[in-house]
Length: 400
Image (cartoon, rainbow, N blue to C red; front, side, top):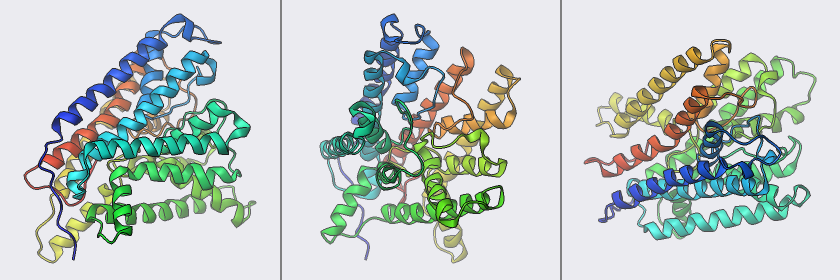
């Protein structure tokens, strides 16, 4: 029999509000520091819009490649970007865990969630440092913490598709970061004999199912649109990597513009679905699929529908509205860019994936619009999770 949810008596509202403020302050300080002339390095001095974009791109863990690369900045600038990725990962894990613990019924304090987040980040840094010695300590640590944070920023280049460390280290780290602290704690408690919550069971099952479905989709499309000259053994690792990378990590593993049109649309669908509530990933999250299906099954047998359906429908409506408005704005600002490419960038920004056809070169209002989308994609799910944890009827499975 499933253990009843544990409802902490202490409100999470103060700590989440404080952490949200710290997140925004981190971005503001990063943008201010990056706008100083000495930060520029090999590039020209960063204008305010580019400085803000680099700060938001790193702190929200989106990880868009840009025409001004991280490696082009001075050592101080690269350190600031690294610190923003590090801070964004820590705050995302802490805020997500603090908001989700009440829904999952995990009796863990905010300090325990913060400590678990810090230990996970330290392990990711060490893994990157010692396993990517050929790329230097800074690149290795950025790859490690970036994978945990589902951030595809790199200093030089992403690992090759045939590199075993991509499949055995970075992609599993991205999955772990996407699951978040609460699921980690529940899996640990499960080893000690405690039943895990419906939320954690749902996200673990959905993670496996969606991974397999997208891997099959990428493999079939690759085999029918020009990849038939490759063997099954060669196609499968690439399809597996695409299935995980497209749902929030966003490492630049392949040129999106060179992919078949059908595969580009699969990438967009994968980015929209995204990762898991309470983790470092973005998107609508996997429970946006499971909870309407669960509600449909409950209605068929005359059972009361869980509150998760309301939150799923609300978040889906908000997401679609934001994507539609942003697309119209960017079409007006960049009429020379094809609509499908703008749609790809809009979805990539709000889902915090960071994949794009070409490195971001926009300036002015278009760049500010992308910054707003990334901030919305990171902050609105925090608000939704907190609202669900404080609702009169707490849903059994979190959405957002």
